[in-house]
Length: 374
Image (cartoon, rainbow, N blue to C red):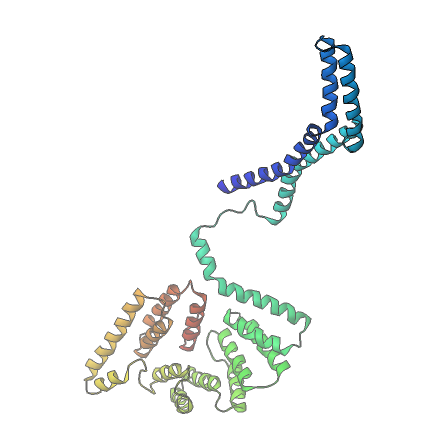
C-alpha cells in the first residue's frame, strides 16, 4: 500500500509540473503588457470625467497623450495584441493539454504496466525465495540445455554441441537423453576412449547403476583404445563384482591403483571398492591408526573401527553439509556388511544436502559408484 501511495504522489507531481506553465503563461503576458496598462488608464480618465473629478480640457489632453502612448506600445508589441478569436484558440489548446495531462498520463502508465507487469502476482514468502535460490544451479543448467538443444535442432551435425550437451543431461539425471547425446558425440566427433567410457557410464546410470552388457561393451571398446583409461577399468571391475567375480574385480582395481597418480581424485573410490570385495584395507583410517591397530585383538580392532564410525555419524547429524563425510560413512557401513545402515545413511545424506543442488549432485554421483542408486 505504501508503494502505491508513493507512485500516486509521483504521478500527481508529474501532472502538476505539466499544468503549472500552462496556467501561468497567458496571465503573465496580459499582466505585463503596456497596452493593457494604457487601456486601463483611458478607462480611469473616463470614470474621473463622469464623476466630475477632472476638468474636460485636462481629460481631453490626458486622453490624447495616453492614446499616443497606446499606439506606440501597440506598434512595438504586435504579438501581444491578438484578436479575441486567437486568445480563445490558445485557451482551447491549453485546456486540451491539461485534460491530456490529467487523463493521458495515468492511462498511459496503466497501459504500459498491464502487459509488462504482474498486478495479480502475490508476494512470495521468504522460505519460497530461499528454496528458489537453492535451485538456481539446476535452473541455469536447464536453460543451457534448452539453448543447446535449439542450436542442435538447426545444426544436428555439430559434434561440439553434442559434446557439451551430453554431460549436462547426465548431471540433470536425464540418462536416456544423455546416452543419445553421447552416441551423437561419437558419430560427429569420432572415436576416443573418453567418449566410449562416458557413454558406458550413462548407460549404467540409466540402468540404476548396473553395468549392463551394452555398457560393458562400451567400456571394453574404451580400454581397447586406451588400456589405462581409469573410468573404463573401474567399471569393468564393477561389472566383475556384480557378476559375482570378486577376485577378478580386485585384480582389475589393484592394477588400476598401481598405475594411478598419488593425487588422483578417484583413488579413494577405487580403494573403497577394493575393500568392498575383500581385496584391501579400509582407506578411511590414517596410517597411525592402522599401525596402532595391528597389535590389537580382532574384537578390539572391530570396536575401534565401530567407535570411529559412530563418531562420524554423530558429527554428520550436527553438520550435514560434509558430502565426503557422508560417503565415508556409507562406505564404512558397506565394508562392515551393514547395508541397511548404509541405505539409511544415504537417505539422511540426501535430506541434509537437498537444498544445495551441487552438493546433492556430488552425493548422488558418489553413492552410485558405491552401488547405491535411486
